[in-house]
Image (cartoon, helix red, strand yellow):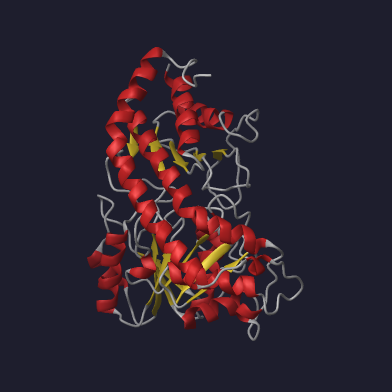
Length: 416
């Protein structure tokens, strides 16, 4: 069966031209995946990962050798002294909150230098919600440096806002629900170096969600002290069913471990319940799977450009995460496109997503997520808040082929 038989003839012709146009760019992405795969393989080999590490621990999880080797593989791959990789970390937001609560103390300040962070963190900070359990309740100060009009970092603003109370400077690599560009490793390196010239002892934290393995280096290899992310995004490789990670300097990871469990227990406790197998296999597959998603994003960007849709990054621009922003400028088209992505998903394809309230978000959200793992952003999904300019965030894809089929059919349904 030819997958293009139900497409409009004009769309099929555009696909053929796009395939030729983006071929060189896709090869560049595959070369990055090759280097990252070699890096991960080296970490597996040098840490002597074996079948015995797949045994499940229960109860307290004392002396879990699989957990120890998993965290050693993460630490080596990301160029850090230590790591926490746990199923008890329930989301990327939880990993970030655990990191920040682990490092910050009452009376100290957190400064975000990449503008307002992702929506779900606003309740953690205490600027939204009832404030219970937030930084605000713990007397942890918060400030942020807005981005310049072109979406770049305001270095003068950073200099002005770093004070003696500033303990943590935070960087959000990915754009989140905003129109600003995601920050490349080169830009993150520049930020880290600038901050350290002003405040050498400040802790630099990076929210690395959606960014792992998209480039050759990670933020902790260019100056970040601590970094966190979700295993149902890039590093889980579509295999890990839950969990998050925190990597960084040993002293910082110890504090985060005390926050995750309890003082005195820290990283020594926490049963893995059979998750080590999925987490190790997923991490091994992650460079390839991320490459598939990035190739899908490049194809999507090129196809959307053919239909005069404002979509970023452009197909020929450098990428540092999985997210493709699409500005529809039309509420109904945004909803229709999202529903089509759901229709061409492997799971729950018969379900029609509708805008609705979601905990942690200010506006109604529409979300296409026909994924094997609930909420897994490494699998193809599309979501966004129903607010002007009606921007949809398309991300993920376990295979390039799935992204190509789904996005093409979505364009066919909305624009033909």
